[in-house]
Image 1 (cartoon, rainbow, N blue to C red):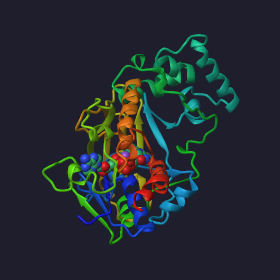
Image 2: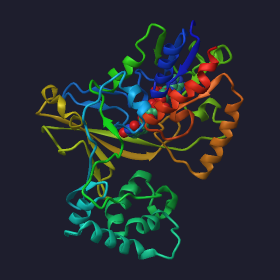
Image 3: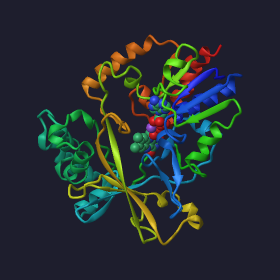
Image 4: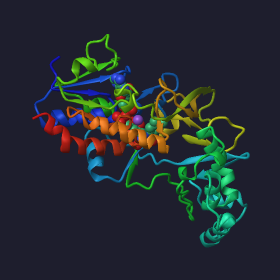
Length: 385
Ligand code: FAD
Ligand code: NA
């Protein structure tokens, strides 16, 4: 092996580190990934039948207010003018989200002004005032009142967690933003959009360099293949972006995660929902939301099939070992266990644990890029001297 640094994981964290290494040093980089593609969870591919760009691990929308990250990503891709908006089906009607004055007036069949809506919600949220929110149900009611909570939050959350909200801790929801105007733009960030030529082209450009080698289909823990942990550890600095508990053979226990199963449906229609993301707020629909990928890229109209469309329904559940870990559950036990794994990690000076799996944290793409840029500057560059 002739690499000066090994990166386990070709997700955005690993790709950013690789890019920084070849930009700032003469070092050679080897990236390993167990999957058969780069990009980690942000990977996408083109669906042949419809021309849709399918985000294989769930819908990914880029957004940031971080100037450094925005400048960085624009070196490798431009972005479309896509603006994220979400709708929800509840009791036979479609409403705009996040809950805003449009949602409220449609729900109450009213024409409230912002001030009137605000005092109505305040009054309804007062139902449990003076009591302590013992569970997520109480918390939801105290934040936005029972009618809106039960219509838009209760069943959705119960499907996400596969648990009755009365049995979920109040701490899962700290705030439920309600907008007292008609703004239903989902993100409040300075910049948002989708990569013009797709996510995967963006990622390929990041590592388009002779000193970066990528090996796919390689499990770092598979001792039967050459580029494994016991052969590499101690011989070369390692950036590890896989699950932190797996590095330590789960010796302190398994950190808990939620995952999502996707069910694909195809329709003989140009447009099934009229939007890219439709949430289903009621209990009778078993999935939380459905993604119609074609609608993320209306600018590709001429390249899309207008007789057919593809939709992915999302079913949320707890992850077991071997499932794709998507969202850290973050119970008190998880926090305690992760702190212990961090202690063990401190004793591995030649290894940097990074990214969402390596640090047991939910990061958006802009956050993971920012974290990688900072870690490169503060610790990784020094490992290469
Ligand atoms: P990952 O992308 O998970 O990459 C880690 C890589 O390590 C993987 O490719 C994995 O195969 C590899 N690996 C693990 N173990 C091994 C091993 N033993 N050997 C070899 N390789 C290994 N962010 C946004 O900004 N906007 C969004 O809309 C958005 N939506 C999301 C929706 C979902 C369902 C999920 C799960 C995430 C979403 N994100 C979104 C977050 C985004 O996916 C992450 O910020 C980003 O992918 C993190 O990159 P990473 O490199 O840390 O991890
Ligand atoms: Na991810």
